[in-house]
Amino acid sequence: MCTSIVEAFDADGAGKGADGWFTISRGVVSYDHPQYAFLEDAIAIDFMNPVDGPEKRAAVELTLDSAKALSAALTRAIAAAEAEEAELDRGFRIAV
Amino acid sequence: MSYEGMIAESVTINGHNDEMISAYMARPLGPGPYPGVVLIHHLPGWDEWYREATRRFAHHGYAAISHNLYHRVGQGNAEDVAAKARAEGGVADDQMVGDTEGAVQWLSAQAYHNGKTGVIGSCSGGRQAFLYACKTNSIDAVIDLWGGRVVQAEDDRPEKQPVQPLDMTKDLSCPLLGLFGNDDRAPNPEQVDQHEAELKKHGKDYEFHRYDDAGHGFFYYHRPMYRAEQAVDGWEKVFAFFQKHLAA
Image (cartoon, rainbow over all chains, first blue to last red):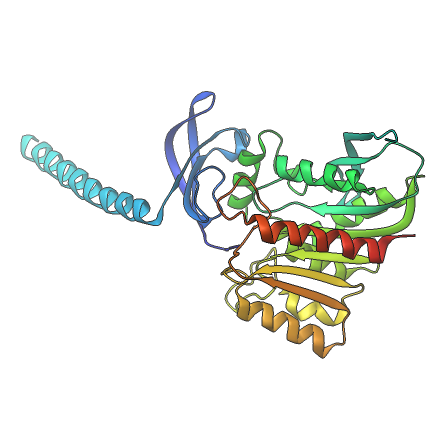
C-alpha cells in the first residue's frame, strides 16, 4: 500500500537517536510501509530535527492496535498531567 | 564458462535544473553495447534493495542506474533520509521528472549504451515511472510495479503532486508493463481497472498482470509481503518486456 497518510506537527522536547539525545523540533505520524517491523503497514512515529540532519531522528513503528493503545495512554496521561498542573496553579494562587 | 564481471559504483549526475545528485550504477564489464535501465526507488528510500536490483539488471546485461531522488533531503542512513523526505511531503513531481531525465541522459552519453533505455520503479517509484513516461519522449519502455496514487482522490492533490498521473495517460510515450497484487489497497484492483480503462481509451501499448494472493511489494524478499511464486514470475515478465523493447 502506498498511502498519503502523513500528519506532521511542531514538537518541542528531546529524543534519543542512534547518536544519543538531541533536541527535537518536528514530529511526524504516518501509516505506510514500515522499515523494520514485520508488518505490511504500520503507524510510524518519527521525532526529528530536520535542520540538524536526517540522522537526528527517533522512530517507532507500531501496529494499529498498539497505536490506539498509545493514543489512549497519551490522552489519560495528558489529562492527569493537566489536572496536576491545575492543582499546582491553584495552590500557587492561594499561597499568593 | 566464459568470463563474467560487472562494475558497480556511485556516480554523480546532473539532475533537475542541472543540480548535481548522487546515483548508483552497475553494468557488465566490457564494451557493450548494453541497453539502459533507470530505476526509480520507492518511498522507503534509496536503499539496499535498489542497489541489489540495479546490480541484478547488470547481471542480465543492462547498464543500470538508480538515482537518488532524496539527494536534496540530506545524506546519511537511507531510512532516516526517507523519514525526513516523508516529513517534507515527498518529492515534487517536476523535480522527479528532471532528475529522472538526468539519469536517462547520463546513460545515453555512455559509450557502452545501445541507444535504448527503459525506466522501472516500484511503489511511489512505479507512479513516478509512469508519470515520467507521460511527460517525456526520452525512453523506449516503462515498468510500473504496483505504483500507488496513479489514481489520486480529489482531496489528494498536494502541492508537490498536483496532477494525478491517470490524467496524463493520453501522453504516455512508450510501451508500459504493469504488475499488481490483487490484495493491494493502494493501488487497489478498482484503481488498476481505472488505469487500464484509460490506457485502452487512448489506444496505448500496455500489458497489465495481476497476481492473486499478493498485495503490495511482493518482490521484497525481506518483507512480509514477499510472494516467491509471484515474484519469480514477475521478474521473468520484467526481463522479457525489456528484452523485447530495449534490445538493439
